[in-house]
Length: 146
Image (cartoon, rainbow, N blue to C red; front, side, top):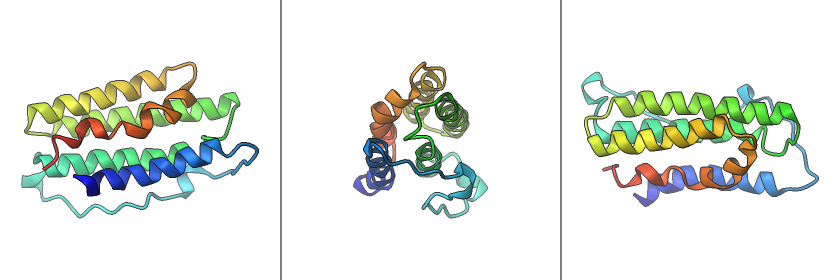
């Protein structure tokens, strides 16, 4: 699903560019920026369908990338704590979304993403995850999306 990859790749790429912009610091309140993503309402009978679970997880990752961008250029403890909190919240949300899937391989992929996010939420250097594995984390679930 190249279109779905682009939906997460573009914000993550922008995040990476922001992180590498040495000397530039932008202060943004994470709650003041909404993610450029729109999800149509999910009919309750369709909530467990792979397409909707993928959309929910991509949205969680996109929203998380926007929140993480506010901490991307920071090097102090507050920035690290902000990243840890963001990754922890994302892990919880991905676990919940994955649990709704009717497809075992999709549940497993969601659990793998959540595990990586959980590890980043307790990491000494969450910035390393942000600049590394986070940029491709959505690819874990791509093969399970219709």
